[in-house]
Image 1 (spheres, rainbow, N blue to C red):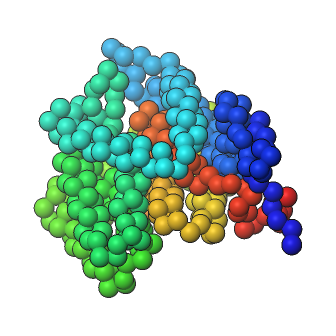
Image 2: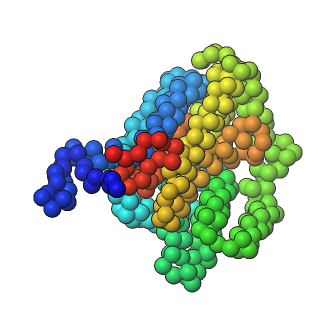
Image 3: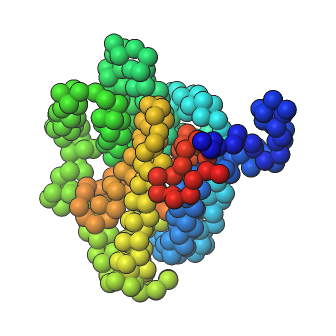
Length: 402
């Protein structure tokens, strides 16, 4: 019966006993990396980032003219050049993170979560207030801890929940719930109700996949619904956003403008830089960039963007079909759920189907912390899902290892 040959990285040789002797140099490590990462996922992400630059180029003139005042003047393509710098830094972070062995990626993700949780606790007392929300720390550069906490949160939650494999009696559900409660507390103090809901959604998905009983999952869902009801009754930010969505107000006016902008281009759009509705759109380069895409590139392009997000999430799930390690399954699913959930929320807001959240469209909206943190999360995802091509194959591929 034929057997697969040993996996010999580029630049390696086989000893007389048959074991590969790996020559540790940068070239061979890159060859190993290229063999093991999910190149399809990487291509999808790079395509999305490339289109993101085009979308920011479309929105940048309108945003620059709207935000320019007597004291501050922005060039038409200020936000485009800014986003280009953010993407360069983000790509570097993605590349470095994707090179990490799985165990090292896990440790760094846990360390990142711990550091950003401490930073999140500092925001209410030492943060910078922008547009009525205190979400940033000024460390020479503007840093939004909640954005960098997202990939770390998925990894540390996967780590905690995977303890059940070693000892089913460990109270992993309560530890995960306690972590979620701590994150929610400090997010609500900013206030940031939208990010709280995103973290809660990722938490629920990971609890469900970890093998907890339906009864316990039901308890968690009921507790989350109760928490939303309590937030509406006692948390002004949540009540304001929900009331504005249901009954009008400033936030409702912004979302209504976004919806009308999105639909104004029809199926094919007005063409690059020819849209007029975007000139009255607040935060055209960030929260409402999907509406700018709709006006200038058309509803067909909007549908393609949605399909691209679905393809990225679907690709991650396909990669996990034959995966047996619980941590890998939970961490990769959590990172994908965070990425897809954020896109889903932003698009629904632009369609006037969800209350305004102040949340960016992943890898398309202009934003420093958001872009770099999302790229870092994709890097962790590429590292965690790396695998020896001779030990497993893509379920959709007909090519077997040789």
